[in-house]
Length: 364
Image 1 (tube, one colour):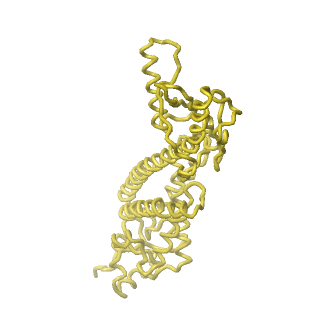
Image 2 (spheres, rainbow, N blue to C red):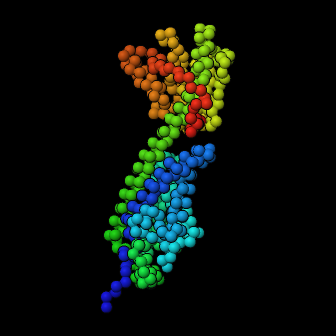
């Protein structure tokens, strides 16, 4: 007599499909967190350390989806996956939350793979490798359960398995019958291992590009804000020159404050000869550097030469400061090794005051 009972491959969702769906879920929840949750937090002026808001959004997204009548995230639902207990029933909210916490914890350690080149991480790299192995359990365990499935006592089945009471009974029988719970073949495990390796590499590659781009925009916004806040001091220096035909000293009375501090650290101040220095004190990428604006007379008008000092990466600088570095190199090349070091790019001050500056990213 032929055994018509379904095997593991027909009952449980394949490993490759699960990983592909998980990647789409991460993409969806990341976009949701960055463009909705983060903007909401900024609107209510609530600051959350690092990317904590992303992890919170992931936890709520997965837990609420698995405990819902769909028994799946929107992506899983579209791909015919259902996250249920071993009897084929919907997960309770507590078990869905436990499964979500475990999955988010495994995912967060993947970031260590992207940071593997940073020396001080040390043995923490082992944690990333272990998390990789715990996710790969879904490819080798009899009921295709990863670590978060084992912890929450859940399984991921194909939609058709829950289509009738007979199919549910077959699922329960399969889960309970140790003789039928065979592990995948060696060839299948090798293919699945390759798939997860490719998935992790591609996912981390694109996410790292996204995070690096967002980080660079953050740094540029901080510097733009710092420059904007110092614009009133520039106007004060111009007014002083118009009245006295000389540049003010650092302690001169110019009608505006000669020093201002930023909410998140750092400050701008007036130095000798009308020079304005913006200094950063908190962010590691900016901490060892400053931006200097020097007033000059050009065709009877006050213009400002910009230069950067210290370790600030050129990509973070305002466009006029980056241009001045390029012009400096050109002038040095033309003078064949002369000792000239004057920044040649000049900017015109626009009368923007501190109240008009965006505070989305404060300098520091």
